[in-house]
Length: 118
Image 1 (cartoon, rainbow, N blue to C red):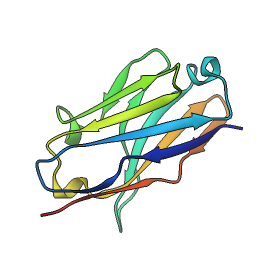
Image 2: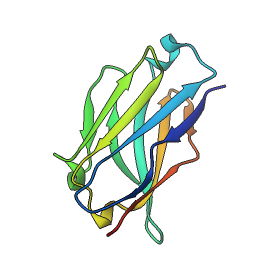
Image 3: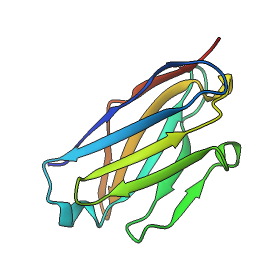
């Protein structure tokens, strides 16, 4: 059974950068390569939103508010998906969660806190 563990969150000043990583375990890299992966975020009092996604074929999409600042990537051999976040803004503050989807599979990690504040 696949498990997802996020890391890399923390406190950063506006304009700074963070790199989030999501590691999958309990599956082969071949199976991981077939998953569509995404990073979501949830801020207090707000709905969870999709920040960035990368398909099994490597196609990416981003929410408008992070385009040009965030980059999602995956390493199928290492079974990881990363989110490079640059030019961070206070409104990026949220818990960031990793998601894996494939057919009936819809798995979430526990999340990692990102706080952007001076």
